Length: 338
Ligand code: AMP
Ligand code: TRP
Image (cartoon, rainbow, N blue to C red):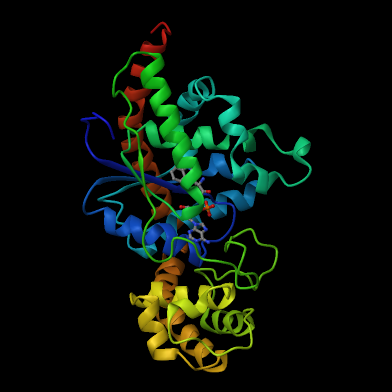
């Protein structure tokens, strides 16, 4: 973080582009809950990122509530952390524009998520999808956030945020104006894979409905998805080394480990030598046991949109009170008239 001396702050966001899934929970939200007691935390629902690919407006509103409700259901306390939706705080977009003029084309050209999401026909991707990581840097730096809890897939975007912060500080001779934000990635669950393909990450926008476990799935659906999960025909090994090259088996063991709080080695000590016929029901039981209280709370919160709206409105006000003065200072540094 070089010589930055401002307060330690945490920011992270999740897109309302579908339902909250197990990868989001293990890779991100679970960390949000732990961090809120240690740092000043800002957790947003990044609706402006979601529209970089087409979103039905009515669904977008619903999913924005759903993601906010999932934060709270998992244990984020809106009286401690600031919970809001990105589009309600205009400072994000203002800083993103300035950062578009700081970031270099060559940097953005290297972003692998754009290549994955745009696919072969990148001429038809939105311009927003291309500058998506620049907006992400603005989300983080508009609060001068020092720490960013995310899953492993966001590592490259975080490196870009650091590059943008560093170039801004350098170009404007504004030593340590922005911190160089640190990703918080480590820990079990940083990379949960699809139940249908051990080489693809679990994603809420996966077209196969059996690929992904949603927080809103009931216990029957969870058990069915795990039963149908792709595996090989070997029994589980008794040591982690035996999982090498067995992507699907490694993923299921990883999910069990992340949810139970045990290392892979302990899970394999218990299940080594057993086939998936025995392991899958045990995994399903554990997933249901851990997610059921969260999904019950999620349903309760979603039935009260008035309360959620109030949480988001309060959050946006608190967020803007921090972000607006940062943007005002940036505008002055850049040379805009007041
Ligand atoms: P997204 O759903 O793409 O907005 O992701 C929101 C957060 O969840 C980010 O911090 C991601 O890194 C994290 N995340 C998404 N999918 C996974 C996954 N399959 N495994 C671990 N973390 C994930
Ligand atoms: N790009 C992130 C994802 O898809 C979501 C995101 C947007 C984000 N802005 C952020 C994450 C700021 C951390 C900090 O997962």
